[in-house]
Image (cartoon, rainbow, N blue to C red; front, side, top):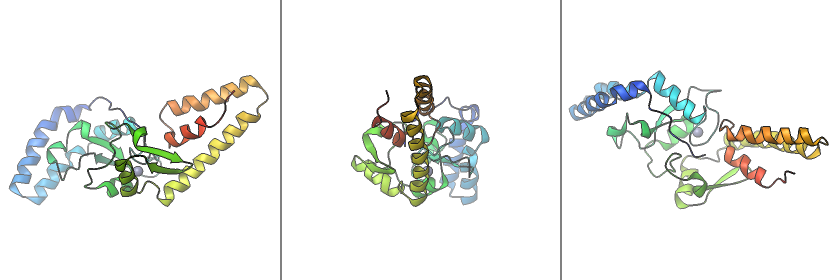
Length: 210
Ligand SMILES: [Zn+2]
């Protein structure tokens, strides 16, 4: 998990959220399950999803794996919509997550919020393993299973690529090429696009660039 910043609210949400919320709350009051389902699904709008994908760079807001390579990904409600339906269409309450994290988070509220919490305060990495530094960090790691096997395997693959790059930098005799390779690596991490940025930064912190 890394700290995320909200992009501007997409136009369909800004335009319709008040009406969508009123209609959803009225449907909930009426108890009509089909109507509730129909009204609730309005957040699943292509423009909203695209903006959320841009916001997380196509990665899951919780596990930081690249969702869009293998799946469509889910619009996730940070505060569960089943607990606070009035936040179903609230831009600040929406993010993008993989199906697994979204499913595991479900109705949980006590999970680190990648937007409002300082993520670095709550987690640390030991090689490919993420650990909680605080009670809510520990709870989030366990509830979302942030050390599930497929994540560990994927992080290991990324560590190997990073190790190879660092070896190349260490052994490159040409100082200019060494500097360019190092700068490209740092610039890539600063773009927010690669997976598992926090883990990779931890490794770089222990590598002596000259
Ligand atoms: Zn995930």
